[in-house]
Length: 113
Ligand code: 5GP
Ligand code: ZN
Image (cartoon, rainbow, N blue to C red; front, side, top):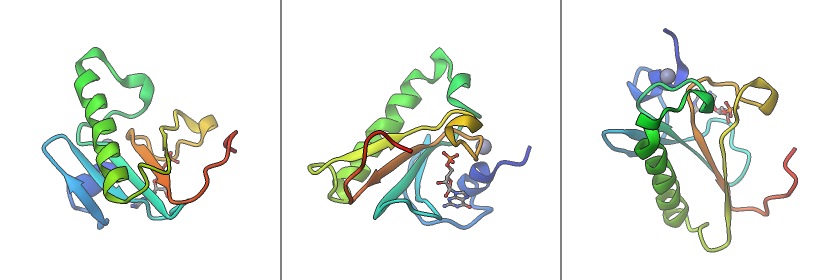
């Protein structure tokens, strides 16, 4: 199965990885929408938010903990940042391996586009 983010996780495709552990990887988005735009992905291939099961509960919490670490280390935690997970095409999902977007370093508008 061809998956862009599995390829990044397996280092078959280059990326700017800023964090990695046994369960997840964080890397810089190739087309940043804010001064900070980092993607947090589980190493387990889960195609959309809808495929998350009870067995993944710890893993999903872990992604949020990594997002907090990224926000703190990049100095955007205090001011504020946004976490986004698009689910399916109508919401803008283009890569079907779940990922948490960490966006910050500028004023984040609401409602989002
Ligand atoms: P989605 O639209 O699925 O929520 O988010 C996919 C994100 O992956 C987009 O923000 C896009 O810029 C990013 N992206 C797509 N291809 C690559 C790639 O090859 N490398 C990196 N680092 N990011 C990518
Ligand atoms: Zn994948």
